[in-house]
Image (cartoon, rainbow, N blue to C red; front, side, top):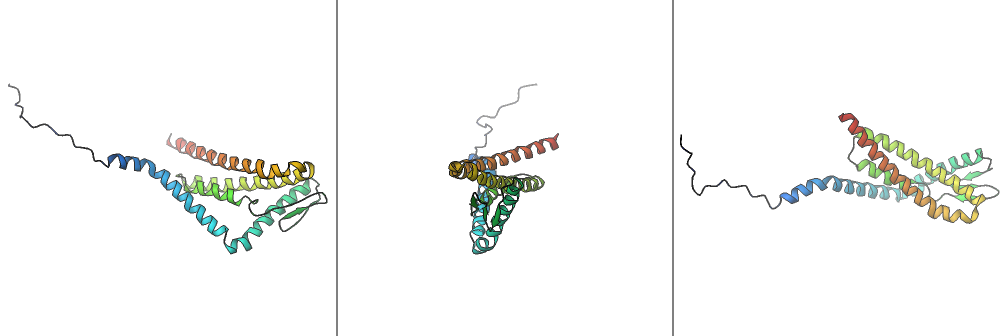
Amino acid sequence: MGKPLKKKGLKKKEPRPSPFAGIRSNWRQKLPVLIFVLGFAVLMILFYVYWLSDYSQNIVQPKVVQVNAGLSNFILNIFGMGTTTVNGTISSARFSVNIARGCDAMEAMALFASALLTFPARWNYKLIGFFSGIALLFSLNILRVVSLFLTGIYFPKAFEIMHVEVWQVLFIIFAIGLFIFWIRWTRKGVTDVAK
């Protein structure tokens, strides 16, 4: 048998890649991040629209402050501090502290919840993370109020530093750490299911 004849001038042409192929693949890779950022921004805007509304400021926020003050007052009295509470103020014969807007942990909870709800994960993980995270942040805020009251009694010179610098930073670190822990937990759950 002879060799197959080659046709001259007929080379198989490779298809040229589209000039938009790189953009499309980059877009697909960045889409989850973009959805997360936009979703987070939308939820935070909705939170602030609600939180700064007249209804929230006149009805909801005073109730949230009263709950924080009431629970903190209860814990302080367990330790024999002899405190009373009126609205958002916790008082004793030695010291008093007023829980104002911003000291109620609602913004930290909103940041945590918005990040958690927009992160790509299963809804059962989101619900567990949401309720656990909100409970932990709320409990941490009660601990903050109690510790600030005790700081005001025993270390009054350190009160402002504890209030503005130490607890603000601790709260941010705790909220971020809680979110990272939740992400790792969801990824571990997905890996365990795949095995």
